[in-house]
Length: 458
Image (cartoon, rainbow, N blue to C red; front, top):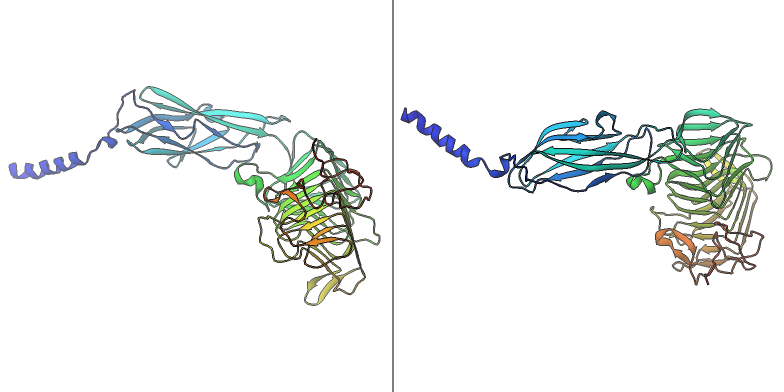
């Protein structure tokens, strides 16, 4: 018996020596747990859209292990939130052990059910933790926004109003001889790769206090400033009488893509008091079209701020175009015009080109930021008057330089392209009757070059 018992006793002693305090569960009600945050907050989220995942860590600072008898959502199955604990998803988890000095990670998401409300609304719940007769709560907070959802639809003669945003998935087409009117203060959100196509007419006319917004549908985390999340606004052949005023267009691939050739030089798209930015490709991309833009700001685009090709008629007045301090690496001018575009090895599309640039700032990180190409053999007429252009060449009637921040931007590192106190652009413009600037500030009789009029405060 002794020869059998002795090895058993040795094994028992070894097992006992491996059992440490952090493995032993204590049911002492005085033991506390700590949380990485006392609340988990999400940015505004469109209803029926799943959020990004947030993390919550629970720490056990005690020597002994603690058994969390329950981890549950306060609203249980009725909650808009979901939690994942140790790879298990569910509104209620039981008997989760945290070793002494160790931690437990919980993943939190929210998918908000619509409330049928116009204004944003708060969505609350909490995660409840029970252990050793104790209870603790971590608050869950987010804002929800209901929207008018449109997916793969063809529309005609609609009026969109502020209140609930319009959420476009895939594509939306305004058919020929129809008009989409977007009233001041309206927001249009685009899901991934979604696009708005105009064969008829778009009247997106905001005002200085109520801009119209075209942007991506995600606001949480990094998504608020990431280019390329949606496709763009396309004006197709036959489209005419389009206006985009007091608008903000951002985080897409192409801001405005115009392909509406016709036999006249009447602007088919008029843009004013509008910002286009954070586009993975282009700000305004146009082919054999008629475009007019005034008091507009375009910046931080992956390819062209302005790319107008295969001829057409283009007029830009009091605009600021800059790829200085961009998310992207550039190798060619950000503003380009051409009377041609190569379709294939055997086909080149070409047409007459007319370009008018007046009181504009054309700036960026390249030594030359403006290119006008007449290689297609068509008639090219370029009228450049009182512009500030990043260039090493002198351009008669304009101001050229390659000096850092020659125009005098307030803070291009923060994408603030208003003018600094001593900006060169001040009072250098030609009075062409554009009475107010991009933010509706009156211009004086010696207007500043660019989209912004500098007004010194008394």
